[in-house]
Length: 476
Image (cartoon, rainbow, N blue to C red; front, side, top):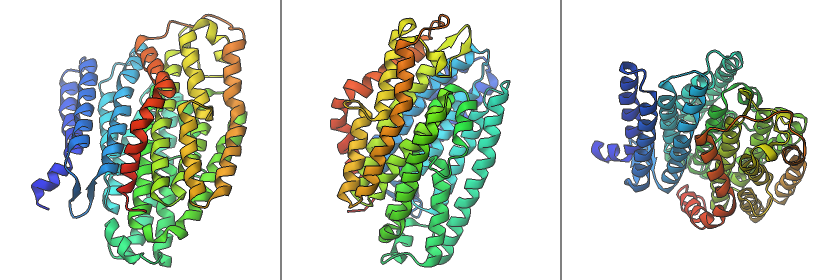
């Protein structure tokens, strides 16, 4: 392809990069223009999503970038989740006296990295995308600089993130050394009948590095502490979109570069998925802080997505994509509810804080109930359909044991979701809650309507779109 054609494939990333640089200059010379910078960032994300949905398809930059149905589907979902996070986070910081224009720009840079991850076609673009996303997330975790917990969260995330980066680089160097190329399609040509020992070692290191990014056990150690310490709207952001981007990159690596070695990586994925479900379900039982509890919930839910991916076929990738998009709605909505709640100016973050919430704030309580039941997988909420697709794909691929054990994990995790609902609906409040801010209420209630019943109609579009994206990975 010509250079101009290559540039055409990169329009979403270019829009984000140029938009972030322009808004950075605007914010630097007009520091009080935080809100205009925020709304400008939302417009940039909307333009990038439109470019992703309508742009040309193909491979560019010597195979380093892929524009296909999978990248378009993922980028639209990621940019939408990023756009929701900007007004939610900006208003949250403003209510605490923190007026910064950097927050939406960091969201743009993280979205740029995630867009590159979704379109990665070789090991170099894989690493650049992961690091660009990660560097922005490290700063976002510590964005509330006057808060000791937030600073600690950012530091922990950075130190452990450096470890995962090392794993990714070492794995990429092994794969390049033994396959002779960094491009996924060229690597695939060397593993048509299975990966060699050296390539397999490299793949294992790459999988470990990506498992860290999606919080899959046993690489989950950063998640509870970072979720608890980071600002609530920041957690709403990086508990959703970055997980989808990393799971798509996971699928891209395994299906496109190592599609001929399904039998060799399938069992590793099954083990990762089941360990994640077990850790998320059982460790969550002991949590009283809601941010830590949903950290373990996210570990378990990533486990379900990995079980879908472990099917090793197009149906499995389709189920994973559908699951992650629906989970993004639940986790973003739940943390929007948390961002909206406070008592006497103090954030409500524990299960005990939610006592009597239904009498005080019935709308928020209903939304949190919907998100909790959806994450549990109770019909007819969106989480139920997400798990149905995952278990169906696992059974169809001859993996009945992971499907059954995943279902058992859902039953165990039901305890902490139902305990929260019981406290909200039946316990007595210790004091009145503050009036929730408008933007958090609108986002929370809107997403709750999507969890049920709007999702029943939306699935008519989401599931087939995920299917078209899945077939772009090249697995049967």
